Length: 168
Image 1 (cartoon, helix red, strand yellow):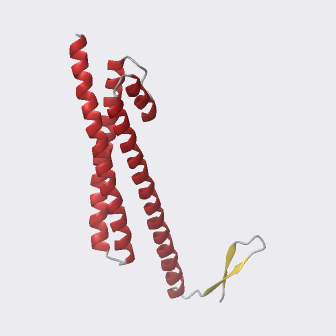
Image 2 (cartoon, helix red, strand yellow; image 1 turned 180 degrees about the horizontal axis):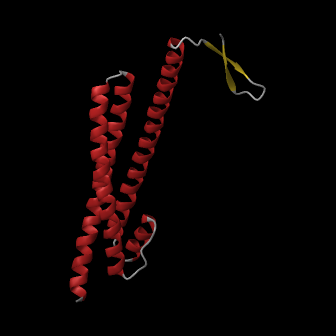
Image 3 (spheres, one colour; image 1 turned 90 degrees about the horizontal axis):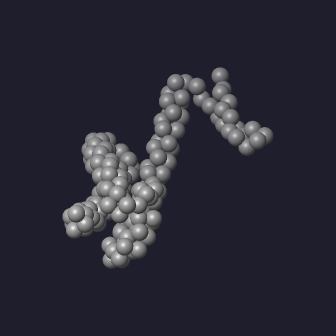
């Protein structure tokens, strides 16, 4: 039975290695799509933007499936090691080091750092995209108000916020 558990563990650890590689690849693709989204916003290419958003949704669905696999796989590995399921990968990496899986522990640690870096870049790019959209929405609102025949001017209140003054 012990040899069977060792074989299961080796297979699951190999799967974990591949899973983290897949996470890095999919998140890299997600970052590229997020950058494409920004370029389509800048060029006002709505058709291409829509395609990018659809691709992004499909990619997010794949990442979600991987996340479910990751959770299940880590639970199974912890069960085979007879340890409590850690909330953070760093705790599992420590267990792997303690169990003489040093090469895998280092590989997972490095891939996780890459993954975290990619995720940070995605978040930064999403902020840029959102900022651009907010500016565009604000400009459209001003344009709409101008066409509606209600010219406005803005002044600052005593607390530094802007207030709209309509002229009639």
